Length: 453
Image 1 (spheres, one colour):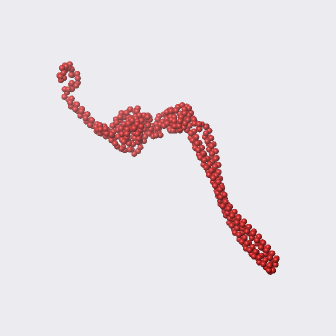
Image 2 (cartoon, helix red, strand yellow):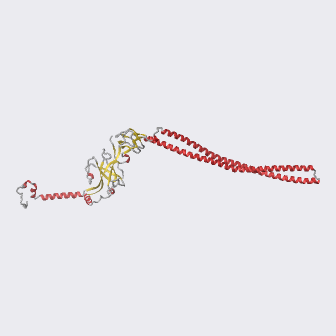
Image 3 (cartoon, helix red, strand yellow):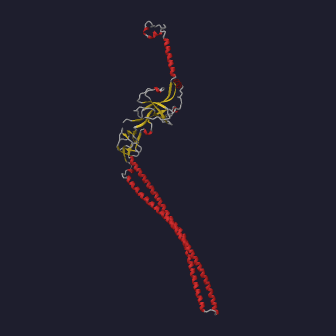
């Protein structure tokens, strides 16, 4: 067209066939394009001032809100062998319903009369304990009786000692009196012998005084012997009083030794009795563990041990039970960089797998097919993948057929800013605005979801 090339095609090109060649000569094409650009610019300017909700995206799964409403394993509390199944997968069971029965495999529990024999041992041991208790009571009574007898005997010996002292004193006085009489009789006999020699007294009178002297000597000898016997008796009473304490102390010590031995044997018997009672309780509890029962109302979802005669250990999982009535929630996992922006009560929008949705992240009110929830719990530590876990509960009705394990895509809603501010923030790689949400004063009632039978 500029006639630069030697190979020209203007003679061969028919310009009327092309609309663009016709527009080149149109004088109104310039203002039309200008008007379009002006309208586009005004619309873009308006869009820049529209509100935009800042958000954080995260992925997670649907779960149960309450720990007691989550799926739980049915475990065997004891080691045993599966003898019978009473339920199968898909059955709806109630709390306490029997699911399976185990058979004993340990040698110490194989005796079918184990509980009865243990009860017999307990009865025999109770009789032994009762015998030891009676023996302890008898020895305690014996010690008390010995102490009383010791006091009574000591008091009696004190009385005898006082009487022996009085008797000894009396015999001593009588001996001294007879000794004086003997001296008087000796003096009289001597005097009368002198008078007899002088012829003043007759021999008969002298013989009478000699007889009195002999009698006085005999009485003096008798009183001396009696006094000696009183002193010996006094010594015997004093020795008996001393020996009384020693004798009773020896008996009491022996009785106390027997009492200590009996008390020790009683304590051993009581300890053995407690062990037997403990063993009996364990046996009775173990018998209850032979039957595996449902820990809660729910559906038997998975049985891991199916065979009859299969041996299981303590804590082995036999199956899984899923509650039929539960509160839904979603577990979300966010990066540590976003964790400071999330608080308890923060609002989150969800898109669930299997439920179609049209999502406008910045304009949540215009989204379709999304569901709203609020954060009810935040972990303080990261998991093995280095992310924090959030638990989000519904604030509105979620899909009725929603089940645990369904994938969920969450959008945590933050502050609302103009579109131009969000573009500027994204271009400068600034984090979203940090703010503290205002929590509702009243907790939102969470809908109950019941599995259809």
